[in-house]
Image 1 (cartoon, rainbow, N blue to C red):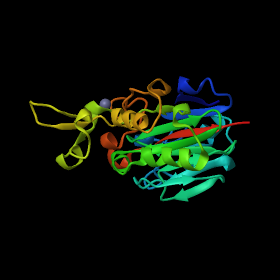
Image 2: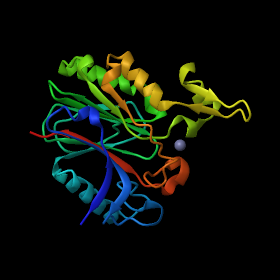
Image 3: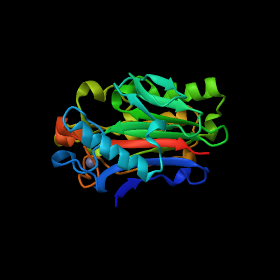
Length: 252
Ligand SMILES: [Zn+2]
């Protein structure tokens, strides 16, 4: 028997057929060990491929998703968006958009933020891999533009959830990254002159700038670095860090 702990977002409860979840490392029956324990869903370079495949099958089964209906982006920290209507692996892609039912978008993270978007009327969905590099290249704007321009979505109808990730108190950056963000989302400690960015706050502001309503955005305050019991963190664990997975689709 498998018992997976997953994060869900109540903002999507009102939409019939939505499957939306973000994994945690906690899962009875998952087989990754050491730094990858338990439910590692990515990082083929350092964990065994067969472990990851097995763990993914547990995660998909838990959400009643058939593995052959899943879309995987080959993430490169870019602002490359893809409209998809077929399952499979899409290289060099950091955001996926679809209007197809029973097609499940995924994202893998270990500090970056998963951003889930659902337009309930037209049933258009998007899933963004949001790290600082993609964000400064306007990945949020490009994704919403694809939805509005190509799929006639009204941004005011979009429901959004920003998942767990590296929160402001833990996202220390160098001067170069620091100056790329608006002042509102920058913090520094006078005592040690360390610099921090509130990436999650920046994502929320970006969503609102491009038309998403404030009260339609759910934001997780959970930190991937602080919650070692729940999450993998590249910042904390280095290259031997596992990956969480976000999944989003509409059944029916
Ligand atoms: Zn933290």
